[in-house]
Length: 467
Image (cartoon, rainbow, N blue to C red):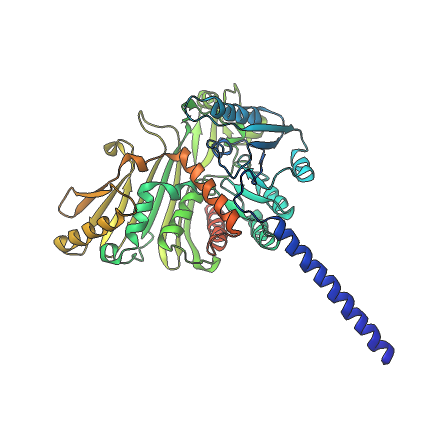
């Protein structure tokens, strides 16, 4: 017994030593990943930048970010086009940037990045086929990740993304996606007004036919970015590589629904109930395909989606669902090109017990988003007083905003142009926020669980739409 007791004690000591060493190692790893806000301490590695969003992160310079950026990508047009965009920022007349791109091109680009690890933040915006796997392995290597949406495009890969968030917590690194639409001014003010009971009341429960909150987005394959026609890679039209619209752009819409309807509330997957979902194609002629890709014919991997000579892309999708009992709808549509003078457009409505808050971006609005407030079951005079008081209060945060009556029960928000910075500028705003989170050493406590819920909603929506 004495001999066994001694052995047991030895095992306990050994186990304690190993556990202590492991805990100490984890703490040391977390300490290595701490940021102070010092100049140039953030060193970016850009992975396979096949989407123009990768370049938009670098449209501005940041004191905290080193001007040397290491790019790892397969050889081909995607990386060439990315470097041209960065060069365009560096050589523009107004506020030129001064990025220095160090490029590795090869089939083993990802393995090379992990082995060399010259940076501490990986930025990824490109082909989504392997993005979830790249994110997980980068996080597992102890590298922070700033990812363009979507971070996952299939229900099968969703568990890996969940695991990536758990590993990020263990490693003391931050995984964050680029939600630019939170910075659009009409959306910001819609959210602010929805939180004022004297104006909005409370969010209705809604129905499937008349959701309490609706977000709709119309995008276009042919468009201009930084003043130039956008050339899209052919793989962008392959839903196995880009993802269907219901899990791609819809990421933004589901995010906004959560962010506006339940601000800073920690959500869970159990809060989501998919009611219905559907998907449909945008049909492109060979001439349309050539105009946006500069290619004379469809690559072999797109032939599966060609009917006759028409390329049928499942870029459109809609999810009707309940979130904590509130009916919501997120819908995305892709057309080939926008009407003259228009671009990508956004529509949103939040239905309250006192008023509706509606963002419209149609021809009447000159294709610029306008926020309308329409009183419902309330006394119009009393409501007008509450609304004017609320806007006076909001003007302390957003100087210059005002509200104008345009009907018996309807008003429009007048918003100064200085707040309408545009989609491209929002990438810098998101990056600035992420840099602050790196200094804080953490994201807001609701961000990670709500990112998980967001991608659960989109991937479950896709699953339902395919049934």
